[in-house]
Image (tube, rainbow, N blue to C red):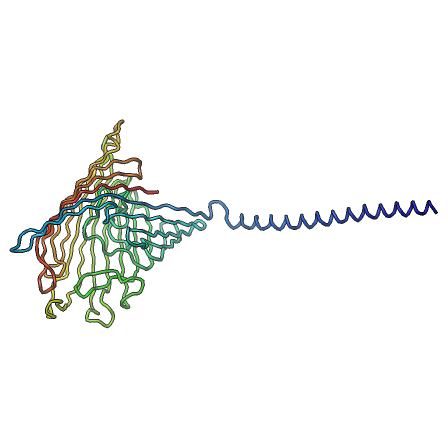
Length: 405
């Protein structure tokens, strides 16, 4: 009887051992299954985001400074009126613009650049580009219209050699649409193209132009483009031509037939003549708006004028990059600009400006700029158009810091 009890006890102990072993094995199996599931998820994430295929980056620029100005206005037959102002932050040129870049694969790039100008937050551009083939990029969204070189290539504070912008280059600006760009070799030379189809420009009741915006004001569209040639194998010289055509009148208005044609030419030359780096840039624009009849804001009478404007700038800068001392960080710059708007319009003027600059480069993308600007604007408006004729002289001093990050 005792022997039977001992056998039973042994069997019970053996059963407990086997039960514990099976339970532990079941727990281990469950743990392995959970771990394998997590590994499978991580493997899928790695497969979806392989290095080199997708990449996110934040770049951008900021500009901050100080401006002091003296404005003297002299109306016909009246004494001069003088006003003075100064501002920290440089109210005309302050900017903080982070740029968000997302590359998906080798062919797709998304660009988004918001901007804070001290009073409001806007968007400089929001664009999607598809690299379809060598020499061919297709893009769509909100982008700088291809016309000339200044707005698209030179306007950033850390690129521009002088604190202000040349007058009269704000059109055609930024617009919504689609475009093609690229370039190809041409023997020892190179050529590039940049064309777009966008909503276009809008003619205002006083004859001025502005961008139509995200909702077009008519059924027409704006076609624009710039073509450039780099005749030297070292690409030191670039010569460009631009053209644009747009319907501008609001649908159903008195300006339905209004059209705009723009023409432009530009030059960009950068070359080292040891020890100096010489940088020459220039651009000429002409805007022609088909003749329209306007209503005077003074007496409601009808009047008209030849709506033709032109703008131009020429700029040269010299930097002794070949020296072995601190002087290599300084750069001297000069720019002349002219902006002529229609005689007899509300904004008619003949504007000239001379800018003199001394820059100190802390790095290749960080610069401290001192600029003296002297401008003169002779008003060619009429009282019937609602303008105020007279002579305006402005002297300004800028101290500006710009950095690309």
